[in-house]
Length: 375
Image (tube, rainbow, N blue to C red; front, side, top):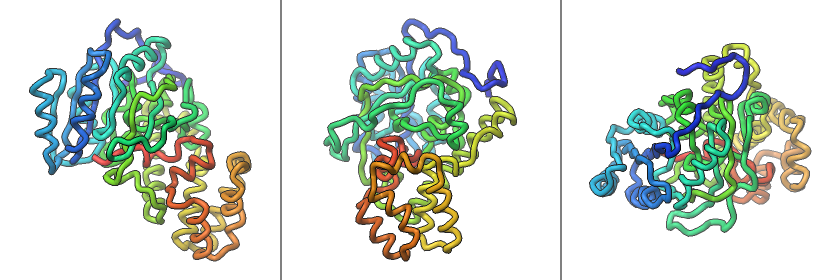
């Protein structure tokens, strides 16, 4: 791993980009033959043309490779890597190893970009030379490509040097979009890759939860990608269940461990020890309490999770405009579990943790696990 020049928590110094930097587009594909052609075409139609597209097929059982090969034959900028199924992280690692670009862009195999995506991303990197991580807004579409909402997903995006606040917030930086909106300078990517291949899903969370510790975030408010939300997104299920909550919390805990290891390698133990526990983050406290109630855990476990939630410094402000939600989580502790679950379904419908977080945190990113794909 490349080392920082100082043990102080500060952005990694970046050299000037070339006039026309090469962009490496990394795509991890698994059984998305119905979408991968449109995804690749959205790259080939870019106004900025100095790019390479590296698609790693992660052992697809459909005709994905046949579709991808048609583009490989017609455009030398498109490359295909085939491997046995190993998950998103392993597929992105394989694609990254073959990349040569000055800029690394992640693109999910079922998402698409607008035609000026790369042009505007490069402008953002060049407008501020120390931007090592550039993000942009996205819009949601369904499996057929229809807009789910006509407005951008985020009212605001994270920007600037966010490392200090991330350390104090359990490692979280809010308002970072899904994988297809993540763009890195190679100097930053070298510090993050290879990704831990334990992450068969949610691999993009490693990128957006590690990058803010080493570089400045540049934000583009424009919608530059379409995030496809459909049944095949196994990590984007809509229904809240104890199993879903448990899975999300397990991912957050594992990412938190990765952050600790990463900070130790890059800065040393002293900085790593400043990373606060996950319970310092309101999102995690809320998820833990919901899991305790919906899974019928003991009264003591529920009481402890409830106290951590309602005594969190951000609790009052975040719940202030949503009285029904606040009432349920604040006073629902005195309700029997079946009644609590019934009221939860009435208040939040079939939302999942994502919509809950959107309501409570005014559009902030809810959890890393709903912003990734299964490869």
